[in-house]
Image (tube, rainbow, N blue to C red; front, top):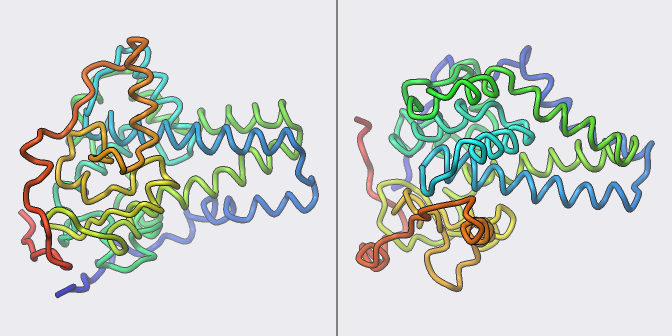
Length: 288
């Protein structure tokens, strides 16, 4: 049975500090003034899919789960690229994501959909409770001063990208290539926290509500195979089988051919067919 979790008083949206987030949702309306140019559409595609890769391959599969290895320069590039998505700093993102996996769908989960769609999609980001970086959960990467710098100055990458879009495509480049791209990117990646725990099929009997969704996988470069991911988090490939499209993994595989990415982890064969035919609802779990 699906139980609804209550939200604590400190999990309410801070409307006073959240206005930049809501303003960003309105910025694409500037397209009505600037129009849409061919250059801005190219920028839209590049900044959406490029930043999606940096989030899924970098913030998520590398910094959160260490599913492959990078050299220090490539690691910095991956962190900077992820930072252009304006989803806060790399240490903040990865540290909180590790906490999500530790307590998935319990009262200590940061963004369980059991607290409602709004909460799991954006509400948890806009409250004060999770505003600080959880350094205890990300000590392995917090030891790098360059990553701490990017985390403390998380405004630098998105501002640099925004300025670049303006220089390349003018006002249309800024509003289409950056602002519209950013709103689409935000809501696409947020669906992994919200919809990927509500809609789709469960191949594995994991102690949470994670599900597999082809549609979410296509939009997010492979992150929609979320039940697979919760079953074996260390895998760089989240589409476990050949028919499960995982664009992020294909990109990582290409980078491995030129030596940028090393030691891509995949799920052991014994786990691929373990705990099959899961029930529609996972079993309850008590937070540790």
